[in-house]
Length: 167
Image (cartoon, rainbow, N blue to C red; front, side, top):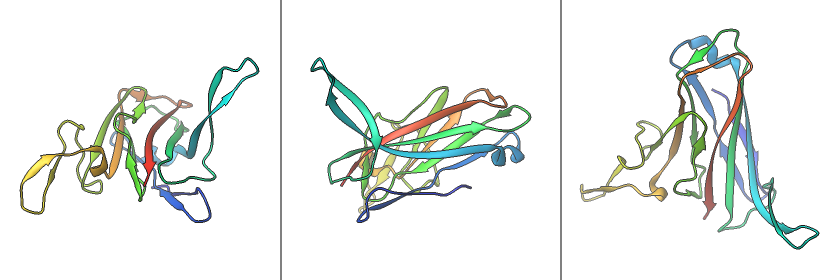
């Protein structure tokens, strides 16, 4: 399990724990190199006055800011790997932005119980203090998991990402 600690500002430190494991070959988890990136989108004007959206490192983040978390991977194994899974917790003091998780050729699942169980967003339920159940909403999510469909070949690279709003 690889830990990546990312400082956004001196006053705010967000910890992003990206873990990866495979169900097909236990030795391949050491062959996957992860890089975590934390960014903001900023809008600038080009020379013609057109708006241009670009990503910049998240050095200063204020409440209400939308932060983009990207986990890039490179598969350094010598054989193909299947059932590769990347999991990320939703950082403290943030709320997941509904529909923002993405990753090419992946199945995306969510957790509301700190990563103990994962389901699609439509299947997630939360138990209230009175024992009643309700459909989970984005603010209830605690973790995201991407499972790659098919196989990763030696040298394959890719990324998964999600967005949150700082509370």
